[in-house]
Amino acid sequence: MVIGGDLSSEALAELMPGRPTRSYPALLSTGADALAWARTGGPEGALVVADYQASARGRAGTEWTVRRGVSVCFSLILRPDLPVEREGWLYTVVVSGLADALGPEATIEWPDGVVRADVRLGAVGVHAELGPDGVDWAVANVLVPDVPPPRGPTLARIVRAIELRYRSPDDLVLDEYLPRCATIGRQVRARLIPVGPAGVVVSGTATGAKLDGALSIETGSGFLVAVRPQHLGVIEDMRSGSDELDGFTDYREMFPSDG
Picture 1 (cartoon, rainbow, N blue to C red):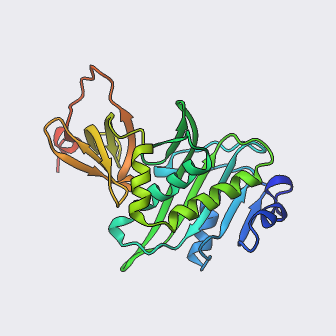
Picture 2: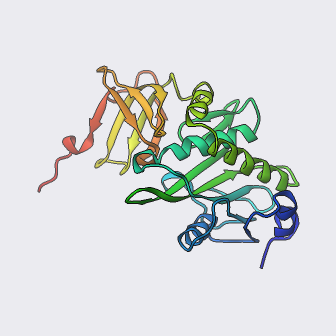
């Protein structure tokens, strides 16, 4: 069974002719469907769309709400030529494409958000499958929660913008990403996976981004720490007067195990 209306296979085929596409009225997760498709040889550029998803997920398992007839949420298969240590670069590429598609006033919240005037316009998540020689394939998940109908043209514009960034020189993508990333220059607190007493926290000033997708954070002690998006649990703005440590904190040292 497929979607009728503005996200139907027929509507998307007119907008993106020749693209392998699966469309559903409802699905547990387009990400899960795309992962299975990629593992069995799904081609680069293959697209999975659903009008409604019961369990859509973004980066680090973040729950997404997909509203039937209102949201655009899809998954795109990529087969990049990247070494393992640069898998996080895909976040820079995908979120840049989403920001491009959502307009010149859209800014980026590292590593996965697009905002305008403090309103969150969309988010991305990336799953990269790693092999001995690099990234074998990846699935990019994209959510724009509120899209005026017809939604098909917006979806097609986002896909094309992501693929344009994906095929652009890395240095150019990063050069254009840096001034759009509103996180840079802020005091932030990054909680790494696993979040909680067993996790690691890096806090300080976000000073830049790197070609592996990492955010550079200068701690209060003057250390420069690179936090990669695939290792991030939560990132927060640090409020003035916070009583938390400004620096690199390994909570495992504060809560030693009995063993």
